[in-house]
Image 1 (cartoon, rainbow, N blue to C red):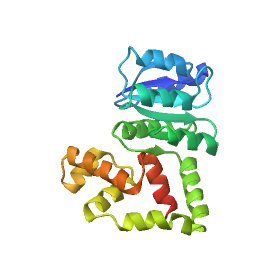
Image 2: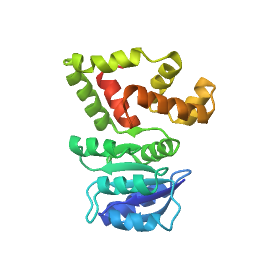
Image 3: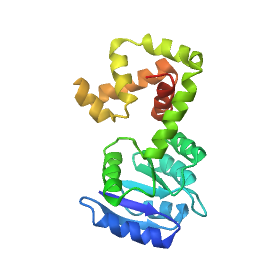
Image 4: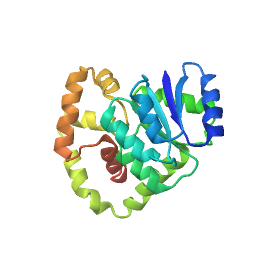
Length: 215
């Protein structure tokens, strides 16, 4: 699996790249010191996963993720950060990134998470997961706000409800197809129908709303 790693700190950039290169199945094919340089590399270098630091000059991690999503929609982007600001986490979710991890993660665990992201799964570190849980608990006290959403979910036909249950678990279409014994084309069609039925355009936003609504 080919990884691009972007971080403005040279010591972290070179050190983590070296550690990842010692993990099975991982090759850091290029490094960048800012988002603009990362985009230049992507224009010429095949990459499977882009591991992007949040706090970088020229283009920060979120801006870089936004441009990657537009130019390379199939490329898995994982945000890496030394801090855990909820605002950065929320902004990254809006860009449909595949994961949000903190720099204290051990190299072997990071390699595992990058492989999962490449396979289509969403990966979050422990602190970002706590943020989602806190948001859910805060929202639970205001459950009527999500009553309309719950009513729409409960009104879904069985075939879309099955897809909904797997989408909010962050399973990619390939896995959903295998679990439901459907073709990937059929799953793509059903996911599109699900978005129309629930009035969503993003899997991440649907997942967050479902979590807040108690699913």
